[in-house]
Image (cartoon, rainbow, N blue to C red; front, side):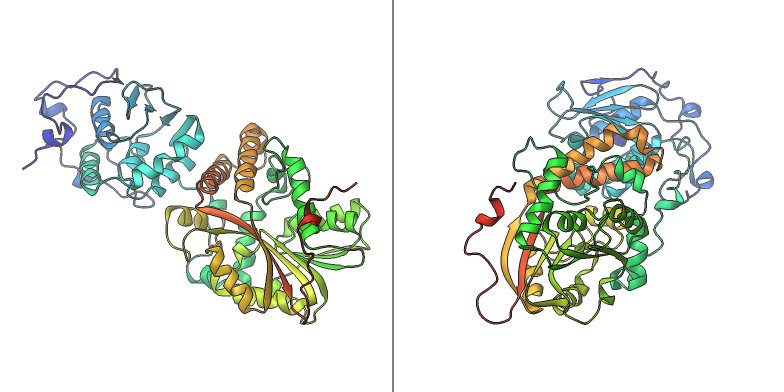
Length: 492
Protein backbone atom coordinates (compact mmCIF):
# COMPACT_ATOMS: atom_id res chain seq x y z
CA UNK A 1 0.00 0.00 0.00
CA UNK A 2 1.29 3.47 -0.89
CA UNK A 3 1.82 5.75 2.05
CA UNK A 4 1.60 9.52 2.07
CA UNK A 5 5.39 9.64 1.82
CA UNK A 6 5.28 7.35 -1.22
CA UNK A 7 2.99 9.78 -2.96
CA UNK A 8 5.12 12.76 -2.15
CA UNK A 9 8.33 10.90 -2.98
CA UNK A 10 7.44 8.27 -5.62
CA UNK A 11 11.12 7.37 -6.06
CA UNK A 12 11.74 6.82 -2.37
CA UNK A 13 11.46 8.67 0.90
CA UNK A 14 14.97 10.07 0.62
CA UNK A 15 14.83 10.89 -3.10
CA UNK A 16 16.76 14.06 -3.89
CA UNK A 17 15.13 17.03 -5.54
CA UNK A 18 15.12 16.66 -9.33
CA UNK A 19 17.92 18.57 -11.06
CA UNK A 20 17.18 22.03 -12.37
CA UNK A 21 14.70 22.99 -9.65
CA UNK A 22 15.57 26.12 -7.70
CA UNK A 23 13.64 26.73 -4.49
CA UNK A 24 14.11 28.83 -1.41
CA UNK A 25 11.42 27.53 0.95
CA UNK A 26 12.91 25.78 4.01
CA UNK A 27 12.00 22.15 4.70
CA UNK A 28 9.79 21.19 7.59
CA UNK A 29 11.21 19.30 10.53
CA UNK A 30 10.86 15.57 9.78
CA UNK A 31 8.39 13.75 11.98
CA UNK A 32 6.91 16.90 13.43
CA UNK A 33 3.25 15.94 13.12
CA UNK A 34 2.06 19.07 14.80
CA UNK A 35 3.60 21.16 12.04
CA UNK A 36 2.72 18.83 9.16
CA UNK A 37 -0.29 20.23 7.28
CA UNK A 38 -1.02 16.83 5.74
CA UNK A 39 -1.62 15.07 9.07
CA UNK A 40 -4.90 16.87 9.80
CA UNK A 41 -8.31 15.64 8.84
CA UNK A 42 -9.59 18.11 6.25
CA UNK A 43 -13.12 16.76 5.83
CA UNK A 44 -14.72 19.03 8.39
CA UNK A 45 -13.27 22.32 7.22
CA UNK A 46 -13.34 21.92 3.44
CA UNK A 47 -16.00 23.85 1.65
CA UNK A 48 -17.02 23.84 -2.00
CA UNK A 49 -16.14 26.90 -4.04
CA UNK A 50 -18.61 28.79 -6.22
CA UNK A 51 -18.26 26.35 -9.13
CA UNK A 52 -17.27 23.26 -7.15
CA UNK A 53 -13.75 23.27 -8.55
CA UNK A 54 -11.53 24.34 -5.68
CA UNK A 55 -12.18 23.46 -2.00
CA UNK A 56 -10.78 25.78 0.65
CA UNK A 57 -9.56 25.26 4.19
CA UNK A 58 -8.35 27.47 7.00
CA UNK A 59 -4.84 25.99 7.29
CA UNK A 60 -1.28 26.90 6.34
CA UNK A 61 0.13 26.49 2.82
CA UNK A 62 2.23 23.55 1.54
CA UNK A 63 5.97 23.98 1.09
CA UNK A 64 7.52 24.86 -2.23
CA UNK A 65 9.39 21.55 -2.05
CA UNK A 66 6.12 19.64 -2.07
CA UNK A 67 4.85 21.71 -4.99
CA UNK A 68 8.11 21.10 -6.85
CA UNK A 69 7.72 17.35 -6.45
CA UNK A 70 4.13 17.52 -7.63
CA UNK A 71 4.99 19.52 -10.74
CA UNK A 72 8.10 17.50 -11.50
CA UNK A 73 6.03 14.35 -11.52
CA UNK A 74 3.35 15.98 -13.65
CA UNK A 75 5.75 17.25 -16.32
CA UNK A 76 8.36 14.48 -16.21
CA UNK A 77 7.58 13.38 -19.79
CA UNK A 78 7.27 16.85 -21.29
CA UNK A 79 9.58 17.10 -24.31
CA UNK A 80 10.33 20.79 -24.00
CA UNK A 81 11.88 22.95 -21.28
CA UNK A 82 9.31 24.53 -18.97
CA UNK A 83 9.92 27.34 -16.49
CA UNK A 84 7.36 27.94 -13.74
CA UNK A 85 7.43 30.92 -11.39
CA UNK A 86 5.36 30.51 -8.23
CA UNK A 87 3.45 33.26 -6.43
CA UNK A 88 6.24 33.57 -3.85
CA UNK A 89 8.90 34.18 -6.50
CA UNK A 90 10.43 30.70 -6.49
CA UNK A 91 11.30 29.29 -9.93
CA UNK A 92 11.05 25.69 -11.12
CA UNK A 93 12.80 24.48 -14.28
CA UNK A 94 11.07 21.36 -15.57
CA UNK A 95 10.68 19.31 -18.73
CA UNK A 96 13.29 17.89 -21.08
CA UNK A 97 16.08 18.35 -21.84
CA UNK A 98 17.14 19.29 -18.32
CA UNK A 99 18.70 22.71 -18.26
CA UNK A 100 17.24 23.70 -21.64
CA UNK A 101 16.17 27.24 -22.39
CA UNK A 102 12.43 27.60 -21.97
CA UNK A 103 10.62 29.66 -24.62
CA UNK A 104 8.16 30.96 -22.06
CA UNK A 105 7.61 31.22 -18.33
CA UNK A 106 4.39 30.06 -16.73
CA UNK A 107 3.62 32.48 -13.91
CA UNK A 108 1.41 30.93 -11.23
CA UNK A 109 -0.10 33.81 -9.26
CA UNK A 110 -2.27 31.63 -7.04
CA UNK A 111 -2.24 28.03 -5.75
CA UNK A 112 -5.42 27.43 -7.76
CA UNK A 113 -3.18 27.44 -10.85
CA UNK A 114 -1.39 24.33 -9.57
CA UNK A 115 -4.73 22.61 -9.02
CA UNK A 116 -5.81 23.48 -12.56
CA UNK A 117 -2.70 21.86 -14.01
CA UNK A 118 -2.86 18.80 -11.77
CA UNK A 119 -6.46 18.12 -12.79
CA UNK A 120 -5.50 18.54 -16.44
CA UNK A 121 -7.79 15.79 -17.67
CA UNK A 122 -10.00 18.83 -18.31
CA UNK A 123 -7.65 21.46 -19.78
CA UNK A 124 -10.53 23.95 -19.75
CA UNK A 125 -9.70 24.44 -16.06
CA UNK A 126 -6.29 25.75 -17.09
CA UNK A 127 -7.96 28.07 -19.58
CA UNK A 128 -10.23 29.39 -16.84
CA UNK A 129 -7.23 29.91 -14.56
CA UNK A 130 -5.59 31.99 -17.30
CA UNK A 131 -8.75 34.04 -17.82
CA UNK A 132 -8.90 34.73 -14.06
CA UNK A 133 -5.23 35.78 -14.09
CA UNK A 134 -4.31 32.93 -11.73
CA UNK A 135 -1.90 31.92 -14.51
CA UNK A 136 0.01 34.27 -16.78
CA UNK A 137 2.43 33.63 -19.63
CA UNK A 138 5.64 35.55 -20.23
CA UNK A 139 7.40 34.83 -23.51
CA UNK A 140 6.22 32.80 -26.51
CA UNK A 141 2.45 32.59 -26.05
CA UNK A 142 2.05 30.17 -28.98
CA UNK A 143 4.58 27.74 -27.48
CA UNK A 144 2.74 27.86 -24.16
CA UNK A 145 -0.56 26.92 -25.82
CA UNK A 146 1.01 23.68 -27.01
CA UNK A 147 1.07 22.51 -23.39
CA UNK A 148 -2.57 21.53 -23.81
CA UNK A 149 -1.54 18.72 -26.13
CA UNK A 150 0.74 17.26 -23.47
CA UNK A 151 -1.73 17.66 -20.62
CA UNK A 152 -4.52 16.14 -22.70
CA UNK A 153 -2.52 12.95 -23.38
CA UNK A 154 -1.27 12.20 -19.87
CA UNK A 155 -1.59 8.54 -18.92
CA UNK A 156 -4.40 7.84 -16.46
CA UNK A 157 -1.98 6.50 -13.86
CA UNK A 158 -0.07 9.75 -13.95
CA UNK A 159 -3.30 11.70 -13.65
CA UNK A 160 -4.36 9.59 -10.70
CA UNK A 161 -1.02 10.22 -9.04
CA UNK A 162 -1.34 13.96 -9.70
CA UNK A 163 -4.84 13.95 -8.26
CA UNK A 164 -3.50 12.14 -5.21
CA UNK A 165 -0.85 14.79 -4.76
CA UNK A 166 -3.40 17.56 -4.98
CA UNK A 167 -5.57 15.95 -2.32
CA UNK A 168 -2.56 15.98 -0.04
CA UNK A 169 -1.78 19.63 -0.65
CA UNK A 170 -2.66 22.18 1.97
CA UNK A 171 -5.68 23.99 0.57
CA UNK A 172 -5.28 26.96 2.90
CA UNK A 173 -4.61 29.49 0.16
CA UNK A 174 -7.05 28.01 -2.30
CA UNK A 175 -9.73 30.65 -2.09
CA UNK A 176 -12.88 30.25 -4.10
CA UNK A 177 -11.95 31.20 -7.68
CA UNK A 178 -12.98 34.64 -8.78
CA UNK A 179 -16.07 34.35 -10.98
CA UNK A 180 -15.87 35.49 -14.57
CA UNK A 181 -17.27 38.97 -15.10
CA UNK A 182 -20.97 38.83 -15.68
CA UNK A 183 -20.58 40.01 -19.28
CA UNK A 184 -18.83 36.74 -20.12
CA UNK A 185 -21.38 34.41 -18.53
CA UNK A 186 -23.44 33.32 -21.51
CA UNK A 187 -27.12 32.80 -20.69
CA UNK A 188 -28.15 30.98 -23.89
CA UNK A 189 -27.20 27.38 -23.26
CA UNK A 190 -27.96 23.85 -24.26
CA UNK A 191 -30.93 23.19 -26.50
CA UNK A 192 -31.64 26.85 -27.29
CA UNK A 193 -28.27 27.29 -28.97
CA UNK A 194 -28.35 23.91 -30.71
CA UNK A 195 -31.75 24.76 -32.20
CA UNK A 196 -30.40 28.07 -33.49
CA UNK A 197 -33.72 29.85 -33.18
CA UNK A 198 -33.95 33.48 -34.28
CA UNK A 199 -33.86 34.71 -30.69
CA UNK A 200 -30.95 32.46 -29.70
CA UNK A 201 -28.92 33.49 -32.75
CA UNK A 202 -29.57 37.19 -32.09
CA UNK A 203 -28.38 36.88 -28.47
CA UNK A 204 -25.34 34.88 -29.51
CA UNK A 205 -24.36 37.43 -32.17
CA UNK A 206 -24.71 40.21 -29.60
CA UNK A 207 -22.57 38.22 -27.15
CA UNK A 208 -19.66 38.17 -29.60
CA UNK A 209 -19.93 41.14 -31.95
CA UNK A 210 -21.44 43.73 -29.63
CA UNK A 211 -18.56 43.59 -27.15
CA UNK A 212 -17.32 47.04 -28.24
CA UNK A 213 -16.66 48.59 -31.63
CA UNK A 214 -13.76 50.48 -30.07
CA UNK A 215 -12.24 47.21 -28.83
CA UNK A 216 -12.34 45.66 -32.29
CA UNK A 217 -10.86 48.82 -33.75
CA UNK A 218 -7.74 48.39 -31.62
CA UNK A 219 -6.66 45.28 -33.55
CA UNK A 220 -8.60 45.06 -36.83
CA UNK A 221 -7.48 46.90 -39.97
CA UNK A 222 -8.73 50.37 -40.81
CA UNK A 223 -11.75 48.97 -42.71
CA UNK A 224 -12.80 46.77 -39.76
CA UNK A 225 -12.66 43.52 -41.76
CA UNK A 226 -13.17 40.61 -39.33
CA UNK A 227 -12.40 37.64 -41.60
CA UNK A 228 -9.47 35.98 -43.32
CA UNK A 229 -7.29 38.33 -45.37
CA UNK A 230 -5.68 37.45 -48.72
CA UNK A 231 -1.88 37.69 -48.81
CA UNK A 232 -0.09 37.86 -52.14
CA UNK A 233 3.11 37.91 -50.06
CA UNK A 234 3.78 37.04 -46.40
CA UNK A 235 5.20 40.55 -46.11
CA UNK A 236 1.91 42.23 -47.03
CA UNK A 237 0.49 44.51 -44.36
CA UNK A 238 -2.84 43.55 -42.86
CA UNK A 239 -4.49 46.58 -44.50
CA UNK A 240 -3.19 45.58 -47.93
CA UNK A 241 -4.14 41.92 -47.48
CA UNK A 242 -7.69 42.76 -46.38
CA UNK A 243 -8.21 45.04 -49.37
CA UNK A 244 -6.93 42.23 -51.61
CA UNK A 245 -9.44 39.85 -50.02
CA UNK A 246 -12.35 42.22 -50.67
CA UNK A 247 -11.30 42.52 -54.29
CA UNK A 248 -10.72 38.76 -54.60
CA UNK A 249 -14.35 38.16 -53.62
CA UNK A 250 -15.69 40.83 -55.98
CA UNK A 251 -13.72 39.35 -58.87
CA UNK A 252 -14.94 35.85 -58.15
CA UNK A 253 -18.51 37.11 -58.17
CA UNK A 254 -17.82 38.97 -61.44
CA UNK A 255 -19.52 42.08 -60.14
CA UNK A 256 -20.65 44.56 -62.77
CA UNK A 257 -22.31 47.99 -62.56
CA UNK A 258 -26.01 47.58 -61.88
CA UNK A 259 -25.72 44.17 -60.20
CA UNK A 260 -27.71 43.76 -57.01
CA UNK A 261 -25.53 42.14 -54.33
CA UNK A 262 -26.78 40.61 -51.09
CA UNK A 263 -24.09 40.58 -48.36
CA UNK A 264 -25.20 38.17 -45.61
CA UNK A 265 -23.56 38.92 -42.28
CA UNK A 266 -22.11 42.18 -43.58
CA UNK A 267 -20.19 43.02 -40.40
CA UNK A 268 -19.05 46.63 -40.28
CA UNK A 269 -19.77 47.04 -43.98
CA UNK A 270 -16.31 46.82 -45.55
CA UNK A 271 -17.28 44.52 -48.44
CA UNK A 272 -20.53 46.37 -49.14
CA UNK A 273 -18.73 49.70 -49.33
CA UNK A 274 -15.89 48.35 -51.49
CA UNK A 275 -18.26 46.62 -53.93
CA UNK A 276 -20.40 49.73 -54.32
CA UNK A 277 -17.54 52.16 -54.62
CA UNK A 278 -15.25 50.15 -56.94
CA UNK A 279 -17.71 48.03 -58.94
CA UNK A 280 -20.78 50.26 -59.08
CA UNK A 281 -23.22 47.66 -57.69
CA UNK A 282 -26.30 48.03 -55.51
CA UNK A 283 -25.69 46.34 -52.14
CA UNK A 284 -28.09 45.08 -49.50
CA UNK A 285 -26.17 44.16 -46.35
CA UNK A 286 -27.80 42.35 -43.41
CA UNK A 287 -26.52 41.73 -39.88
CA UNK A 288 -27.88 40.78 -36.46
CA UNK A 289 -25.37 42.92 -34.56
CA UNK A 290 -26.72 46.29 -33.46
CA UNK A 291 -23.27 47.79 -33.05
CA UNK A 292 -22.15 46.64 -36.49
CA UNK A 293 -25.39 47.92 -38.01
CA UNK A 294 -24.93 51.37 -36.49
CA UNK A 295 -21.26 51.53 -37.52
CA UNK A 296 -21.97 50.40 -41.10
CA UNK A 297 -24.85 52.86 -41.58
CA UNK A 298 -22.63 55.74 -40.43
CA UNK A 299 -19.90 54.58 -42.82
CA UNK A 300 -22.38 54.51 -45.73
CA UNK A 301 -23.44 58.07 -44.95
CA UNK A 302 -19.87 59.24 -44.46
CA UNK A 303 -18.89 57.94 -47.91
CA UNK A 304 -22.04 59.29 -49.59
CA UNK A 305 -23.21 55.88 -50.78
CA UNK A 306 -26.79 56.00 -49.47
CA UNK A 307 -28.18 55.55 -52.99
CA UNK A 308 -26.17 52.33 -53.48
CA UNK A 309 -25.86 50.64 -50.08
CA UNK A 310 -28.62 49.63 -47.66
CA UNK A 311 -27.72 48.02 -44.31
CA UNK A 312 -30.50 46.29 -42.35
CA UNK A 313 -30.90 44.44 -39.07
CA UNK A 314 -32.27 41.22 -40.48
CA UNK A 315 -32.14 37.45 -39.99
CA UNK A 316 -31.41 35.59 -43.23
CA UNK A 317 -34.58 33.55 -42.67
CA UNK A 318 -36.64 36.74 -42.97
CA UNK A 319 -35.48 37.66 -46.47
CA UNK A 320 -38.11 38.09 -49.15
CA UNK A 321 -39.18 35.01 -51.10
CA UNK A 322 -38.47 36.77 -54.36
CA UNK A 323 -35.35 36.08 -56.43
CA UNK A 324 -34.05 39.63 -56.18
CA UNK A 325 -30.27 39.37 -56.20
CA UNK A 326 -27.77 38.84 -59.01
CA UNK A 327 -24.96 37.93 -56.63
CA UNK A 328 -24.69 36.85 -52.99
CA UNK A 329 -21.70 37.01 -50.64
CA UNK A 330 -21.55 35.47 -47.20
CA UNK A 331 -18.23 35.94 -45.42
CA UNK A 332 -17.59 34.48 -41.97
CA UNK A 333 -21.28 34.10 -41.23
CA UNK A 334 -22.35 30.53 -41.91
CA UNK A 335 -20.39 29.24 -38.88
CA UNK A 336 -23.21 30.73 -36.77
CA UNK A 337 -26.02 29.01 -38.67
CA UNK A 338 -25.79 25.61 -36.96
CA UNK A 339 -25.25 22.32 -38.77
CA UNK A 340 -28.92 21.34 -38.63
CA UNK A 341 -29.88 24.67 -40.19
CA UNK A 342 -27.46 24.54 -43.12
CA UNK A 343 -30.15 23.21 -45.49
CA UNK A 344 -32.43 26.11 -44.51
CA UNK A 345 -29.59 28.57 -44.91
CA UNK A 346 -28.42 27.49 -48.38
CA UNK A 347 -31.99 26.93 -49.58
CA UNK A 348 -32.82 30.51 -48.59
CA UNK A 349 -29.83 31.86 -50.51
CA UNK A 350 -30.79 29.75 -53.53
CA UNK A 351 -34.36 31.06 -53.39
CA UNK A 352 -33.42 34.76 -53.34
CA UNK A 353 -30.74 34.42 -56.05
CA UNK A 354 -31.75 35.04 -59.65
CA UNK A 355 -31.28 32.21 -62.17
CA UNK A 356 -27.75 32.36 -63.52
CA UNK A 357 -26.57 34.23 -60.42
CA UNK A 358 -23.52 33.45 -58.30
CA UNK A 359 -23.18 32.85 -54.57
CA UNK A 360 -19.86 32.95 -52.67
CA UNK A 361 -19.74 31.39 -49.21
CA UNK A 362 -16.54 32.10 -47.29
CA UNK A 363 -16.36 30.08 -44.08
CA UNK A 364 -14.35 27.88 -41.74
CA UNK A 365 -14.42 24.08 -41.76
CA UNK A 366 -12.49 21.58 -39.67
CA UNK A 367 -11.04 18.13 -40.15
CA UNK A 368 -13.66 16.14 -38.19
CA UNK A 369 -17.23 15.44 -39.15
CA UNK A 370 -19.80 17.11 -36.94
CA UNK A 371 -19.36 19.37 -33.93
CA UNK A 372 -18.16 17.49 -30.87
CA UNK A 373 -17.11 18.39 -27.34
CA UNK A 374 -13.37 18.81 -27.78
CA UNK A 375 -11.56 21.42 -25.72
CA UNK A 376 -11.60 23.96 -28.55
CA UNK A 377 -15.33 23.41 -29.15
CA UNK A 378 -16.23 23.87 -25.49
CA UNK A 379 -14.03 26.95 -25.16
CA UNK A 380 -15.48 28.55 -28.29
CA UNK A 381 -19.10 27.88 -27.36
CA UNK A 382 -18.65 29.01 -23.77
CA UNK A 383 -16.55 32.14 -24.24
CA UNK A 384 -16.45 33.20 -27.89
CA UNK A 385 -19.15 31.95 -30.29
CA UNK A 386 -22.05 30.46 -28.30
CA UNK A 387 -23.73 29.32 -31.53
CA UNK A 388 -20.59 28.34 -33.46
CA UNK A 389 -20.54 24.93 -35.17
CA UNK A 390 -18.20 23.58 -37.85
CA UNK A 391 -18.12 20.57 -40.16
CA UNK A 392 -15.86 19.18 -42.85
CA UNK A 393 -15.86 21.00 -46.19
CA UNK A 394 -17.00 17.84 -47.99
CA UNK A 395 -20.18 17.67 -45.92
CA UNK A 396 -20.81 21.40 -46.42
CA UNK A 397 -20.46 20.98 -50.18
CA UNK A 398 -23.02 18.17 -50.14
CA UNK A 399 -25.56 20.49 -48.51
CA UNK A 400 -24.81 23.23 -51.06
CA UNK A 401 -25.44 20.83 -53.94
CA UNK A 402 -28.58 19.34 -52.39
CA UNK A 403 -30.01 22.85 -52.20
CA UNK A 404 -29.76 23.23 -55.97
CA UNK A 405 -26.43 25.03 -56.41
CA UNK A 406 -23.76 24.03 -58.89
CA UNK A 407 -20.31 24.38 -57.35
CA UNK A 408 -18.08 26.21 -59.80
CA UNK A 409 -14.98 26.80 -57.70
CA UNK A 410 -13.50 25.90 -54.31
CA UNK A 411 -10.45 27.58 -52.76
CA UNK A 412 -8.80 26.85 -49.41
CA UNK A 413 -7.28 29.95 -47.81
CA UNK A 414 -5.90 28.14 -44.75
CA UNK A 415 -2.39 29.71 -44.84
CA UNK A 416 -3.96 33.14 -45.24
CA UNK A 417 -6.02 32.81 -42.08
CA UNK A 418 -3.01 31.69 -40.05
CA UNK A 419 -1.20 34.85 -41.16
CA UNK A 420 -4.28 36.99 -40.49
CA UNK A 421 -4.66 35.68 -36.95
CA UNK A 422 -1.02 36.26 -36.13
CA UNK A 423 -1.44 39.87 -37.28
CA UNK A 424 -4.51 40.24 -35.07
CA UNK A 425 -2.81 38.73 -32.01
CA UNK A 426 0.21 41.00 -32.44
CA UNK A 427 -2.03 44.05 -32.71
CA UNK A 428 -4.10 42.92 -29.72
CA UNK A 429 -0.96 42.48 -27.62
CA UNK A 430 0.50 45.80 -28.74
CA UNK A 431 -2.80 47.54 -27.96
CA UNK A 432 -3.34 45.90 -24.57
CA UNK A 433 -3.50 49.13 -22.60
CA UNK A 434 -5.79 50.79 -25.13
CA UNK A 435 -8.08 47.74 -25.29
CA UNK A 436 -8.55 47.79 -21.51
CA UNK A 437 -10.23 51.18 -21.85
CA UNK A 438 -13.12 49.38 -23.53
CA UNK A 439 -13.18 45.81 -22.15
CA UNK A 440 -12.06 43.90 -19.08
CA UNK A 441 -8.74 42.06 -18.73
CA UNK A 442 -10.53 38.72 -18.97
CA UNK A 443 -12.21 39.74 -22.25
CA UNK A 444 -8.82 40.72 -23.65
CA UNK A 445 -7.43 37.34 -22.55
CA UNK A 446 -10.33 35.45 -24.14
CA UNK A 447 -9.64 37.04 -27.52
CA UNK A 448 -5.88 36.56 -27.19
CA UNK A 449 -6.22 32.87 -26.40
CA UNK A 450 -8.95 32.28 -28.98
CA UNK A 451 -7.05 33.88 -31.85
CA UNK A 452 -3.63 32.48 -30.97
CA UNK A 453 -5.01 28.95 -30.56
CA UNK A 454 -6.92 29.31 -33.83
CA UNK A 455 -3.73 30.38 -35.63
CA UNK A 456 -2.05 27.16 -34.48
CA UNK A 457 -5.02 25.08 -35.65
CA UNK A 458 -4.96 26.69 -39.08
CA UNK A 459 -1.22 26.08 -39.28
CA UNK A 460 -1.62 22.42 -38.32
CA UNK A 461 -4.51 21.81 -40.71
CA UNK A 462 -7.14 21.13 -38.05
CA UNK A 463 -8.99 24.15 -39.42
CA UNK A 464 -9.38 25.44 -42.96
CA UNK A 465 -11.23 28.37 -44.48
CA UNK A 466 -12.91 27.83 -47.84
CA UNK A 467 -14.49 29.99 -50.48
CA UNK A 468 -17.23 28.06 -52.27
CA UNK A 469 -18.37 29.75 -55.48
CA UNK A 470 -21.65 28.29 -56.68
CA UNK A 471 -24.20 29.18 -59.34
CA UNK A 472 -27.96 28.87 -59.69
CA UNK A 473 -28.53 26.84 -62.84
CA UNK A 474 -30.79 28.18 -65.54
CA UNK A 475 -29.83 25.74 -68.28
CA UNK A 476 -26.92 26.11 -70.65
CA UNK A 477 -23.29 26.92 -69.84
CA UNK A 478 -22.26 27.97 -66.34
CA UNK A 479 -21.76 31.75 -65.99
CA UNK A 480 -18.01 31.30 -65.56
CA UNK A 481 -14.91 32.21 -67.61
CA UNK A 482 -12.92 29.29 -68.97
CA UNK A 483 -9.90 30.19 -66.80
CA UNK A 484 -9.13 31.96 -63.54
CA UNK A 485 -7.17 34.70 -65.28
CA UNK A 486 -9.77 37.30 -64.31
CA UNK A 487 -8.92 36.77 -60.65
CA UNK A 488 -5.30 37.76 -61.02
CA UNK A 489 -5.28 40.32 -63.84
CA UNK A 490 -3.81 43.68 -62.88
CA UNK A 491 -6.36 46.45 -62.33
CA UNK A 492 -5.77 50.18 -62.33
